[in-house]
Amino acid sequence: MEATPKVVEEFARHRLMQSGADTDPVLVVVRDHRVIASLESTDFGELMDVAQIAAVGYGADALGMVFEGVAPLVETNPLTGRPWRPGEADDTRRERDGVARGWVREVAITIASVRGGATQCILYTLTRTGDIVELTSREDPTNGVGPERILQEALAKPAADPAKVPDPDGDMRARSGSPLLPVEAGRVSLDIGCTRVLDGRLRRGSAVFVPRDTIEADQLRSEGLMAWQVRMPPG
Image: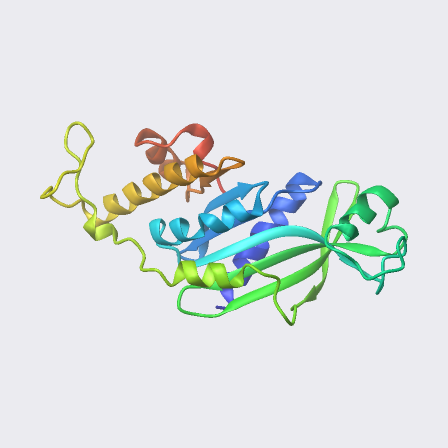
Protein backbone atom coordinates (compact mmCIF):
# COMPACT_ATOMS: atom_id res chain seq x y z
CA MET A 1 0.00 0.00 0.00
CA GLU A 2 2.80 2.44 0.88
CA ALA A 3 4.10 2.78 -2.69
CA THR A 4 0.72 3.28 -4.35
CA PRO A 5 -0.20 6.66 -2.81
CA LYS A 6 3.26 7.92 -3.74
CA VAL A 7 2.72 6.91 -7.38
CA VAL A 8 -0.61 8.76 -7.43
CA GLU A 9 0.90 11.80 -5.67
CA GLU A 10 3.79 11.99 -8.15
CA PHE A 11 1.29 11.86 -11.01
CA ALA A 12 -0.76 14.63 -9.38
CA ARG A 13 2.26 16.87 -8.81
CA HIS A 14 3.47 16.55 -12.39
CA ARG A 15 0.00 17.18 -13.79
CA LEU A 16 -0.59 20.27 -11.67
CA MET A 17 2.82 21.72 -12.44
CA GLN A 18 2.32 21.16 -16.15
CA SER A 19 -1.03 22.94 -16.22
CA GLY A 20 -0.44 25.84 -13.84
CA ALA A 21 -4.23 26.39 -13.82
CA ASP A 22 -7.39 24.66 -12.71
CA THR A 23 -7.43 21.08 -13.95
CA ASP A 24 -10.23 18.59 -14.51
CA PRO A 25 -10.67 15.53 -12.27
CA VAL A 26 -8.70 12.49 -13.38
CA LEU A 27 -8.96 8.78 -12.61
CA VAL A 28 -5.62 6.97 -12.78
CA VAL A 29 -5.03 3.25 -13.20
CA VAL A 30 -2.02 1.73 -11.40
CA ARG A 31 -0.57 -1.63 -12.43
CA ASP A 32 2.88 -3.04 -11.73
CA HIS A 33 3.70 -0.01 -9.53
CA ARG A 34 3.15 2.60 -12.25
CA VAL A 35 0.33 4.62 -13.79
CA ILE A 36 -0.66 2.82 -16.99
CA ALA A 37 -3.75 4.83 -17.93
CA SER A 38 -5.46 8.10 -17.06
CA LEU A 39 -9.07 9.10 -17.60
CA GLU A 40 -9.95 12.78 -17.51
CA SER A 41 -13.36 14.46 -17.57
CA THR A 42 -15.04 17.71 -16.62
CA ASP A 43 -17.80 15.52 -15.18
CA PHE A 44 -16.69 13.87 -11.92
CA GLY A 45 -19.65 11.46 -11.99
CA GLU A 46 -18.65 10.29 -15.46
CA LEU A 47 -15.33 9.04 -14.10
CA MET A 48 -17.06 7.21 -11.25
CA ASP A 49 -19.37 5.53 -13.78
CA VAL A 50 -16.45 3.98 -15.69
CA ALA A 51 -14.23 3.07 -12.71
CA GLN A 52 -15.30 -0.57 -12.81
CA ILE A 53 -14.54 -0.89 -16.54
CA ALA A 54 -11.05 0.49 -15.89
CA ALA A 55 -10.42 -1.77 -12.89
CA VAL A 56 -11.53 -4.92 -14.71
CA GLY A 57 -10.28 -4.26 -18.23
CA TYR A 58 -6.83 -3.01 -17.28
CA GLY A 59 -6.38 -5.55 -14.48
CA ALA A 60 -5.71 -2.66 -12.13
CA ASP A 61 -3.72 -3.21 -8.96
CA ALA A 62 -5.06 0.13 -7.73
CA LEU A 63 -7.18 3.08 -8.79
CA GLY A 64 -6.43 6.69 -7.92
CA MET A 65 -8.35 9.94 -8.09
CA VAL A 66 -6.81 13.38 -8.42
CA PHE A 67 -8.99 16.47 -8.27
CA GLU A 68 -9.01 20.04 -7.04
CA GLY A 69 -11.34 21.85 -4.70
CA VAL A 70 -11.76 24.79 -2.38
CA ALA A 71 -11.98 24.47 1.41
CA PRO A 72 -13.18 27.17 3.83
CA LEU A 73 -10.71 28.58 6.34
CA VAL A 74 -13.37 30.32 8.42
CA GLU A 75 -16.41 28.78 10.04
CA THR A 76 -19.09 30.82 8.24
CA ASN A 77 -19.33 32.47 4.84
CA PRO A 78 -18.27 36.12 5.43
CA LEU A 79 -20.63 37.27 2.67
CA THR A 80 -23.73 35.67 4.15
CA GLY A 81 -22.88 35.22 7.82
CA ARG A 82 -24.24 31.68 7.55
CA PRO A 83 -22.60 28.24 7.33
CA TRP A 84 -21.04 27.48 3.98
CA ARG A 85 -23.32 25.92 1.38
CA PRO A 86 -22.08 23.68 -1.47
CA GLY A 87 -20.29 25.69 -4.15
CA GLU A 88 -20.02 28.89 -2.12
CA ALA A 89 -16.36 28.43 -1.23
CA ASP A 90 -15.40 28.16 -4.90
CA ASP A 91 -17.60 31.13 -5.82
CA THR A 92 -15.83 33.14 -3.13
CA ARG A 93 -12.43 32.13 -4.52
CA ARG A 94 -13.32 33.09 -8.10
CA GLU A 95 -15.48 36.15 -7.59
CA ARG A 96 -14.37 37.74 -4.28
CA ASP A 97 -10.63 36.93 -4.09
CA GLY A 98 -11.37 34.62 -1.18
CA VAL A 99 -7.90 33.06 -1.08
CA ALA A 100 -6.11 36.39 -0.68
CA ARG A 101 -8.65 37.45 1.97
CA GLY A 102 -7.93 34.30 3.98
CA TRP A 103 -11.51 33.02 3.71
CA VAL A 104 -10.81 29.89 1.67
CA ARG A 105 -7.88 27.86 0.41
CA GLU A 106 -7.34 25.87 -2.77
CA VAL A 107 -6.76 22.17 -2.22
CA ALA A 108 -5.65 19.18 -4.25
CA ILE A 109 -7.03 15.80 -3.22
CA THR A 110 -5.55 12.40 -4.05
CA ILE A 111 -7.17 9.06 -3.33
CA ALA A 112 -5.41 5.71 -3.76
CA SER A 113 -7.42 2.50 -3.41
CA VAL A 114 -5.63 -0.85 -3.65
CA ARG A 115 -7.19 -4.09 -4.90
CA GLY A 116 -7.84 -6.26 -1.85
CA GLY A 117 -6.43 -3.58 0.42
CA ALA A 118 -7.01 -0.20 1.98
CA THR A 119 -7.77 3.27 0.63
CA GLN A 120 -5.75 6.35 1.50
CA CYS A 121 -7.06 9.86 1.02
CA ILE A 122 -4.71 12.84 1.24
CA LEU A 123 -5.60 16.53 1.06
CA TYR A 124 -2.96 19.15 0.21
CA THR A 125 -3.06 22.91 0.32
CA LEU A 126 -2.51 24.03 -3.28
CA THR A 127 -0.51 27.22 -3.82
CA ARG A 128 0.09 28.83 -7.22
CA THR A 129 2.71 31.54 -7.67
CA GLY A 130 2.88 32.38 -11.35
CA ASP A 131 3.72 29.12 -13.10
CA ILE A 132 4.97 27.47 -9.89
CA VAL A 133 2.63 25.06 -8.13
CA GLU A 134 3.25 23.78 -4.61
CA LEU A 135 1.45 21.10 -2.60
CA THR A 136 1.85 21.65 1.12
CA SER A 137 0.09 20.96 4.44
CA ARG A 138 -0.45 17.28 3.83
CA GLU A 139 -3.54 16.05 5.70
CA ASP A 140 -5.52 12.85 6.07
CA PRO A 141 -9.24 13.77 6.09
CA THR A 142 -10.96 12.00 8.98
CA ASN A 143 -14.18 11.27 7.14
CA GLY A 144 -12.84 10.79 3.61
CA VAL A 145 -14.01 12.84 0.65
CA GLY A 146 -16.55 10.68 -1.19
CA PRO A 147 -15.37 8.42 -4.04
CA GLU A 148 -13.52 5.86 -1.89
CA ARG A 149 -16.41 3.40 -1.77
CA ILE A 150 -16.89 3.47 -5.55
CA LEU A 151 -13.19 2.78 -6.17
CA GLN A 152 -13.18 -0.08 -3.66
CA GLU A 153 -16.29 -1.63 -5.24
CA ALA A 154 -14.73 -1.36 -8.71
CA LEU A 155 -11.57 -3.13 -7.53
CA ALA A 156 -13.62 -5.88 -5.88
CA LYS A 157 -14.63 -7.14 -9.34
CA PRO A 158 -12.36 -9.86 -10.82
CA ALA A 159 -9.79 -8.52 -13.26
CA ALA A 160 -9.99 -9.62 -16.89
CA ASP A 161 -7.62 -12.54 -17.49
CA PRO A 162 -5.12 -11.93 -20.33
CA ALA A 163 -4.65 -15.70 -20.59
CA LYS A 164 -8.27 -16.07 -21.74
CA VAL A 165 -8.38 -13.63 -24.65
CA PRO A 166 -9.45 -15.32 -27.92
CA ASP A 167 -7.24 -14.91 -30.96
CA PRO A 168 -9.15 -12.92 -33.62
CA ASP A 169 -9.07 -14.32 -37.15
CA GLY A 170 -8.37 -12.46 -40.37
CA ASP A 171 -11.38 -10.13 -40.04
CA MET A 172 -10.33 -9.28 -36.46
CA ARG A 173 -13.33 -10.96 -34.85
CA ALA A 174 -12.84 -13.59 -32.19
CA ARG A 175 -15.35 -16.44 -32.41
CA SER A 176 -16.46 -19.18 -30.07
CA GLY A 177 -13.82 -21.88 -29.98
CA SER A 178 -11.04 -19.60 -31.28
CA PRO A 179 -7.56 -20.38 -29.92
CA LEU A 180 -6.31 -18.13 -27.15
CA LEU A 181 -3.68 -15.46 -27.51
CA PRO A 182 -0.40 -15.80 -25.60
CA VAL A 183 -0.64 -14.02 -22.25
CA GLU A 184 1.50 -11.05 -23.30
CA ALA A 185 -0.53 -10.54 -26.48
CA GLY A 186 -3.73 -10.95 -24.49
CA ARG A 187 -2.63 -8.19 -22.12
CA VAL A 188 -1.97 -5.84 -25.06
CA SER A 189 -5.35 -6.69 -26.56
CA LEU A 190 -7.14 -5.95 -23.28
CA ASP A 191 -5.26 -2.67 -22.80
CA ILE A 192 -6.14 -1.51 -26.31
CA GLY A 193 -9.75 -2.59 -26.04
CA CYS A 194 -10.22 -1.02 -22.62
CA THR A 195 -8.70 2.30 -23.72
CA ARG A 196 -10.91 2.46 -26.80
CA VAL A 197 -14.06 1.61 -24.85
CA LEU A 198 -13.34 4.16 -22.14
CA ASP A 199 -12.40 6.90 -24.59
CA GLY A 200 -15.74 6.35 -26.28
CA ARG A 201 -17.68 6.38 -23.01
CA LEU A 202 -16.23 9.67 -21.74
CA ARG A 203 -18.38 12.21 -23.54
CA ARG A 204 -16.85 15.09 -21.58
CA GLY A 205 -13.33 13.77 -21.42
CA SER A 206 -10.82 11.29 -22.76
CA ALA A 207 -8.89 8.15 -21.85
CA VAL A 208 -5.24 7.58 -22.64
CA PHE A 209 -2.82 4.71 -22.15
CA VAL A 210 0.61 5.52 -20.69
CA PRO A 211 3.23 3.19 -22.22
CA ARG A 212 6.57 2.29 -20.67
CA ASP A 213 8.56 3.55 -23.64
CA THR A 214 8.41 4.44 -27.33
CA ILE A 215 8.56 0.77 -28.33
CA GLU A 216 5.36 -0.02 -26.42
CA ALA A 217 3.77 3.22 -27.69
CA ASP A 218 4.49 2.26 -31.31
CA GLN A 219 3.04 -1.22 -30.73
CA LEU A 220 -0.16 0.18 -29.23
CA ARG A 221 -0.64 2.61 -32.11
CA SER A 222 0.12 -0.02 -34.73
CA GLU A 223 -2.38 -2.45 -33.19
CA GLY A 224 -5.35 -0.17 -32.76
CA LEU A 225 -4.97 2.95 -30.61
CA MET A 226 -5.16 6.41 -32.11
CA ALA A 227 -2.36 8.91 -31.55
CA TRP A 228 -4.34 10.87 -28.92
CA GLN A 229 -5.03 7.66 -26.98
CA VAL A 230 -1.33 7.12 -26.21
CA ARG A 231 0.52 9.55 -23.96
CA MET A 232 4.16 9.11 -23.07
CA PRO A 233 5.01 9.16 -19.34
CA PRO A 234 6.61 12.28 -17.83
CA GLY A 235 10.22 12.65 -18.77
